[in-house]
Image (cartoon, rainbow, N blue to C red; front, side, top):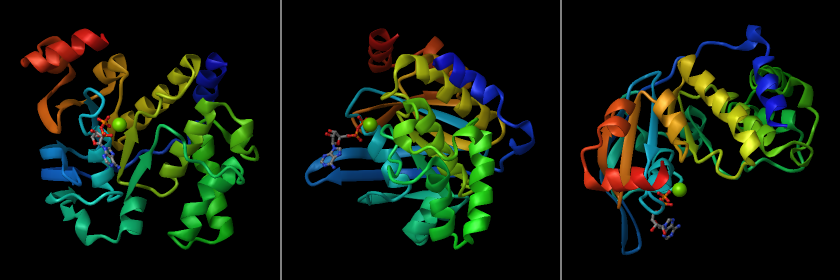
Length: 261
Ligand code: ADP
Ligand code: MG
């Protein structure tokens, strides 16, 4: 149940709950098109180390495309993305994706691997760790997301909320500098949402740099350091949660909030 999942998380072994050293992320005048469809029309964004940025905005405004450009799942037409001051376009995509984790709405776990296997895979394949080293890291990360006791379960034997926490543990196992979250609670049954949001809030408190695309306005309001409102491929407004939710300046943001709140 949802309550069970929240308490699983609270029971996570505090000894393994480490502090993180998040990196900085900066997006400069980013343009992206699918064929003739212009989807990002000059995005600028600054995400300080250890801070949480929530991106909100209507469907089709380019939020997912922005995240996909940041870790080079798609290539923009123009502009730059700097990770700790270094252009991501000078980093091999595989290495970049170790430094910038991404968690999706559809967990994308490997169905034939256990939870532990799913978390241990990338550290072995991409970082070249031994099976034993990678397994030790995977066990620690699963404990950190409250799933030590589910290490040997396959995804099909876990709830959606637990699968999503495995996906987060998998991102953490690479020791990323930044984690990108794309509507990670949108596919979950309502009672499972809270456990995943609590985990993200906890990661933020411990210093992970995070960019979170979300429809959870209460979460954005209470957890974000910065809220960014996108519409039609542009950043229309950004600011503190108080500014964005308490004092929206543009009509477009006021209309959006009226629809979702
Ligand atoms: P959001 O995440 O804000 O809903 P997206 O970044 O997914 O927005 O999409 C922005 C626009 O790009 C939409 O009009 C969408 O239909 C279009 N789009 C997204 N992915 C593709 C794709 N692979 N090929 C063509 N068009 C796409
Ligand atoms: Mg999207």
